[in-house]
Amino acid sequence: MALKGAIVVDTEKCKGCGICESNCPTKTIGISTEVNGKGYPFAYMANPDACTGCTNCATVCPDSVITVYRVKI
Image 1 (cartoon, rainbow, N blue to C red):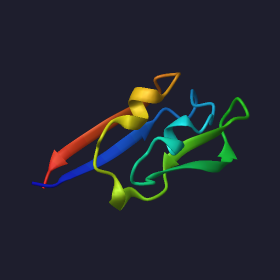
Image 2 (cartoon, rainbow, N blue to C red):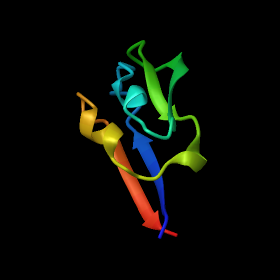
Image 3 (spheres, helix red, strand yellow):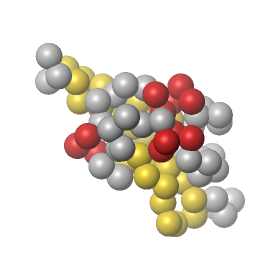
């Protein structure tokens, strides 16, 4: 059974620290070149087809701004 995942990042609270990006085993997450209202770049799903919903990103996020969803396919 395979899992398909997706993440939602609260871009206004994300500080673009990159911890989620470096802990993503499927290289799904990237850091945007755009900035939020506070002037920080933010995390986003750079490769959405690769996400398995493993929750590594949400677990390591120091600001708890990532929500992970996953479904069985």
